[in-house]
Image 1 (cartoon, rainbow, N blue to C red):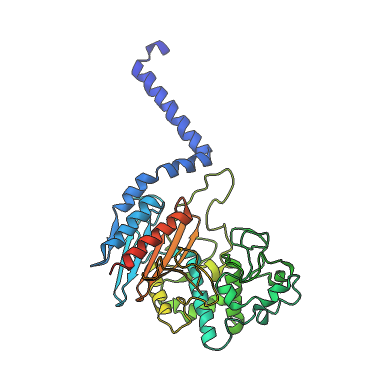
Image 2 (cartoon, rainbow, N blue to C red; image 1 turned 90 degrees about the horizontal axis):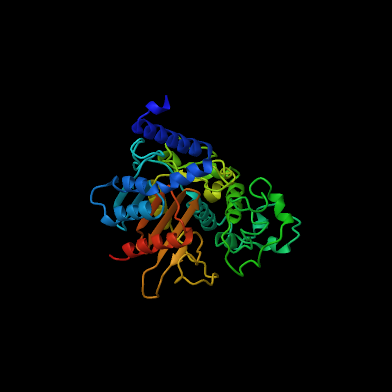
Length: 397
């Protein structure tokens, strides 16, 4: 029987066996399948970069920023909104809501993205409003409001101030065993086990250095809640008019109008998705918001226009180098001024697995909000490149 097979039949048979083997291998091997998906990214990026939609008369650099995010920073779907100092709004979007290009709906200006740590702007703004309303001061000790701090083994915790929490100088080292950061490092302290503050040792002397801390902003959320006798999420949603916007607090599952995120687990162990990776409800005041870029830009534009101290204010006690990007924290944002004779721009960014967010505000009140469903290979270095690109565009005029 086999002698009757032609060379063509044999070739077809061998191809079928090969294809079956390859399909079977990738079906059974999740790690290999995820790596293959990553390797197809240039094709997906090209399709997404060709699908950019902008509002009328938008500056060309907005679309250029989306192309950069798509081709260089692993983000096949993006939104950018720009409010000029005059108040004129521009926006651009690109990519697809679902995982597969062409097979899913296009991203629009209404598509939902997670804000990650950009959420901290609402927490800082509300704290600063409480200061202006004389309900607390920047030098109010946290222990005066959080009554669970009663017998700390580290007495320095009694003296942590609101100012230090805002500027990430309270002594919480996010990488220590007591870091309680959102990446499952350290103890689960805030918001559900705050008595645990009595049992930890600070990572450094408060005000001696800066160390970015989600724990600090969770505690600020508790301050807001306790001074208003209501849940933090209810206060923020009402104060900032969420009912008239796309803004919502997220939970541990995707929302129906939410973009998919360009994240796959390529290691042997780790996180399979960003939805179950973190306790978003517990991190509401640090990384719990979602919405679109237009609403983000508009809300931040209003925050920046408020009387001082506001989200643009720089703390007089912080000795930091504003010439170094991403080094000098104010009460809410990082301040960047490469030379004394050049303009200053303020930044607040956020990153999670498969997504990134960024807000920039210039000295005239212009606001840029950039939301992406991917993260760069080198988060810090590539994120700083994006910030410098935006700085150059904002300071050209």
